[in-house]
Length: 136
Image 1 (cartoon, rainbow, N blue to C red):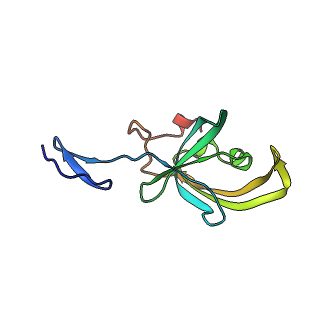
Image 2 (cartoon, rainbow, N blue to C red):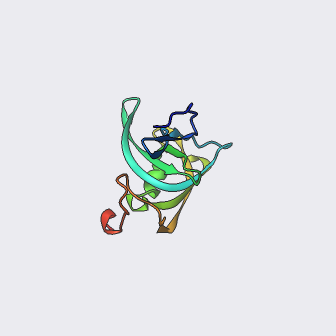
Image 3 (spheres, rainbow, N blue to C red):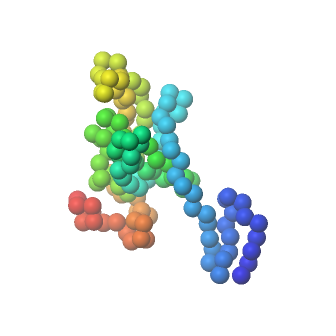
């Protein structure tokens, strides 16, 4: 067995297997300075934030970095489970002061999704995802 000093981005060899560290996804915040996130749409899950249940999305960018972000009223109407495995681009367009959700101006987003699922997309068990698997 080979051992080596480990850095976060280091590939290590263990028992003949090449190993890469898996990092937790980073929480992404859409702002005017950071308005866009795109990558392969990995999942939709329910999480509890400050005692309230909400939806969380996960995307993996082209450099294999994973990001999560929380649903808004606008995003929840646009991003659907059938988009899992597709390339997704989400761009924050700002607030609409004329429309309020829970007392705050509605945050507007432009969402674009690829027509075809990414060919290398696999589920967590390494099995290719088919249209039948997601009910399409």
